[in-house]
Length: 425
Image (cartoon, rainbow, N blue to C red):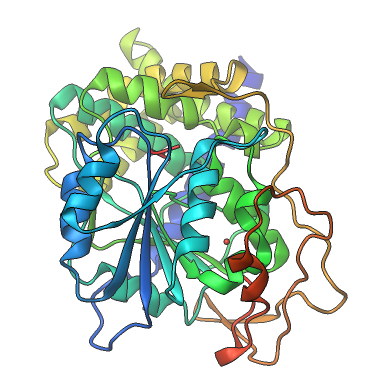
């Protein structure tokens, strides 16, 4: 019992340190008054006819967007027809090569087909508001890769409660969104539902090829490029982005729950530590309360969890009682997280993928080429004289196109090479 108490105290300390970072969170994204560079929006889509319409309508109406590219990833429905009818440029996806996950392959093709200096990738269930794309482009003055955390749309109390409980496990493991100080590469987080980067830099880095086999593609990409020296930002969308991920609590449990563990991008030691924090600091206090035997530390942790539930209301478009009830489902969230860690699922929409054969790590980098950064107010500013990491020398990227070859290193403006709950693999 003393050992369990000591472990729970250690977990509580870890949570307290991570939550304390929220006091210095960076400001949320906000519309900017200046015109952004040419922005291409790339949307990977596989069987998305039922939900891509609102996303496309919003993107096509935004004056900051120069082109909208939908990569039809061998859809079996009318995704391509709908996208084309609304005015998007449809890129028919080529057959999936061995070793690739569908979303990375679709994104690679979309980025190569894009003509903009800046690329924003969106999932089909995203609902962007006017000003999002200009705000994202503006952040690329300080970051090489940036992703935005959305406001979530949840249909009912049960769905919202389970979703908020899952979301709390991310905060307990990694801290709040918008950290003022860039985390270590192996703890970097990102949201693949909405990312932005310089097109030529991504092609030069061959980012998607390097994480081609990962189900947690967004975090794998962010950690790989952060290890290369990229400044990777994860910012609150500030209400400029909504996402309607699932249509029921069962969908949240099945779809988001399986990717929440980040199993294929996290080492065994961190997996064990993260699970311990969730079980000891979130699930155990609820279980002891249910038996009528909570300790003083349990009561403190329950109070902290209720405060977090209140803070998480801002993460939902229409926060309801489900957010405040979410702590009651923390044991279920811990159980789902454990199951996804021990028995990872690698199938999605009719495709089953073998275990990843690539790891999120940097490729060879020329001596002295890693970008140097000076931290100012928690954000990073790059030295315009920096050179860029060299591309990986061994080419394992099938179909590497002329668009990739001609992009070359980026020198204009001092840019160096920068890089998923991923809903559209």
